[in-house]
Length: 120
Image (cartoon, rainbow, N blue to C red; front, side, top):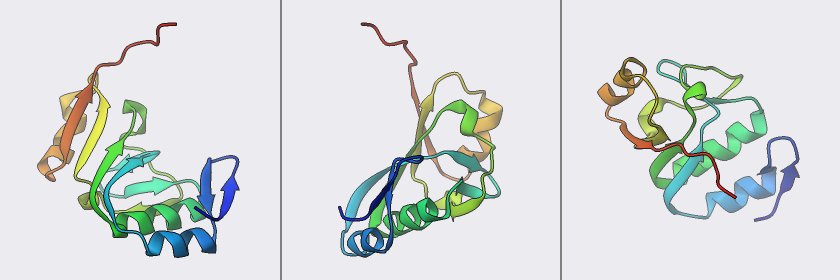
């Protein structure tokens, strides 16, 4: 994919990237969520990142968010999307039900994963 790599966010961005994404239909988008709030939705710290993620969401049939428990109920600077765009969230299995309940009530499927330290 063409565009410029933002070394801080590790995101390819720019007009060329948006143009390329606009011509691609994605079945499943695995979205790395940096901040998620039940009222404010998905937010990110960089404006260019919000443009790219917003466009990929528009082009995708299914959105699977991946995030750690620390990212729930946080808000960053730039809005990407309302939470209703998310089909499911994959996260750790140590999150309290009280945090997950509002998302489940919005119809978002929660996929809990076991958290294991890496073995080398």
